[in-house]
Image (cartoon, rainbow, N blue to C red; front, side):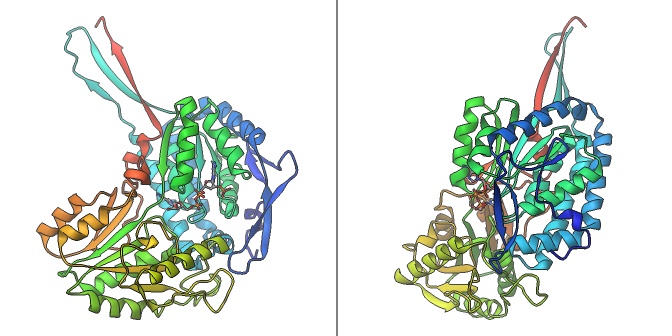
Length: 483
Ligand code: NAP
């Protein structure tokens, strides 16, 4: 790693304010997805080290929750500033372990800091209520308190933001955290821990543990000390964690998979729709939970949209994310590449045509060509499964009702997009789409101020905005009598 601040690259876990190895001495190798060569390794921890981290967090809980919101805010802001001071190195680490272009890595880290900035302030506004009581000598008082130790499990596609989006509200309201990052991108998480230590979080408040997903996940979900699980990842793993969490009736937040429809109506500004579709589909090589996965285009504007969209896709420069000319990096691994190819082959076998791409990139390895499929039929697997790759399947539709039914025909309900100008249509379609996020005339709806999250099998709870605090708070009712 070519870093200015070499201390950011840690190959140990951060538990109870100490940097530790696994008890067994075993490690997990981490590869660069662009070169497939090893970057380093991290401890392969299991249930025992996780229990130690949970206990350390619990020991820290009383003091941390008893600090004032302002005292916690000062430490959060210090962490925020340190991340910004080290943004070049943090972006380098992210690109090397995750593959996304440096500019996208920097963008992600910046976005991650906005959650810290937001919650450093918003956590000062955890207001209660005084509710008028029907009896004259009584008062109903409602206060909000931190839930306790939080277990946070995060994916590889956003190695920094998925951590700050969970930790900033949790830490802000007084909850210590035990974070388990994805095994493919642990170094961004460990670098955040280096800076959290420097920022002055007390020992045990911020813990990062790497290793066996099954063992760590089981301990975090079944240990009664942990009061809350916040997970971002696949729906499949989310369901396992929900089952496991039921044994101790924990609070849970689940940010799971998506299958976003992207609708272009006949009154849309086509150039803006093309720009929105490029951003939504090809950011992070199509590996985001809110990526457009099914593009529905009205028959009247289908040919125009397809031509302009393909022309823009042709400009995407695939390569190693460290090269400044690269606008799209590799996929995370060979498994992902094979899934993408399978979806393309299956779509073609069920009637689709390849408008551009459709194959492994000449760079080989984990690189796939940005792909557009036209005339896709609803028989194709891609219509129902999350692809998580740079493939845009385009479907034709002829009426609002038809496209709303098609868009909602999925068990997922995270993000949806549409482009239109008629205000009546905009209201009607926005209300009819069964999604937690409806993005109208923009391909990039995410920011710290919005309640991010899904319905149906895309999840439970919201991250970001003032609603994001609720997931880390318990409501307590105090009954006051004899007044
Ligand atoms: P994943 O396979 O579900 O993994 C996510 C995290 O869960 C990783 O840390 C993984 O650890 C861990 N994990 C895997 N099996 C586990 C188990 N049995 N118990 C406990 N933890 C376990 O998902 P991914 O492939 O990393 O991420 C892609 C998925 O995340 C997509 O479906 C995407 O849509 C979704 N996502 C959703 C959002 C959202 O906000 N809704 C945001 C980003 C991504 P290991 O790495 O060690 O296996």
